[in-house]
Image 1 (tube, rainbow over the protein chains, first blue to last red):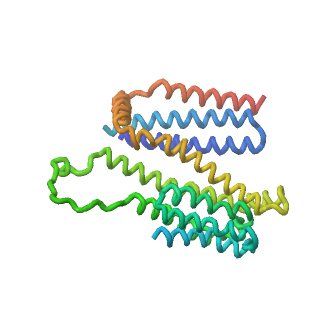
Image 2: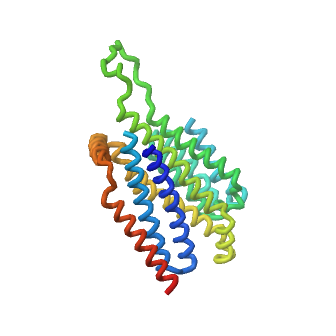
Length: 62
Length: 243
């Protein structure tokens, strides 16, 4: 059960981080560079957290 | 087989576009015939470098001399797909027939004990990497080129920025896409997969270390760091929006 929870969480975080990168592109198109950098940082951080969740899901599988 | 596939590539990439845009007069005729001469040289000499390197490069000479040959009104999406299939078939065919040589029949056959156990995992892994590289080599340049050649917004932007030079700029962008793909292939695809392809012992050691690290069922420091960075950036973004 914990394994599925971690897998769903990891998938949601990694897919959800794409939204932040899309927002980053939108901010760049509007020439709001500071906001673009901040949103990109959020995207990278969310991807990193999702990667850790995927690692925990892998441990649960074993 | 290589002759037929090479002539197919020459006809579809060079001859038909040259006839279509009227680039068969004077010295341009010689440039159009140049890839055919290189193909014949490669077949007679039997060199892989000529057939897989020089011939595809000389295919680009006539297009460089007459950029209109590579424009999107010459290549519709369907024709572009047919040309892609022809070029891929030529590259696969030549690389296969140039490296595949049937060994002479042995005098006697003795089964080795290692042959009973099937193919070892490292060879199966290596084969998967090879197929992955082949897939990436077909899909990535196809997507890049079709995007450059057939995306309406790119074409309208080029027409607006470079009036009267649309064909030239489209061809330049297509060449840029090919160069970008070669860089991506060399540094990202091949670069990342090189340890899997050749350094089997290193990758096994690395995977074993990652597996033993993963046995510790707690989040590592980078998890907390990621949460902290995300929260800090959200806070900074909120401040920037409302102050």
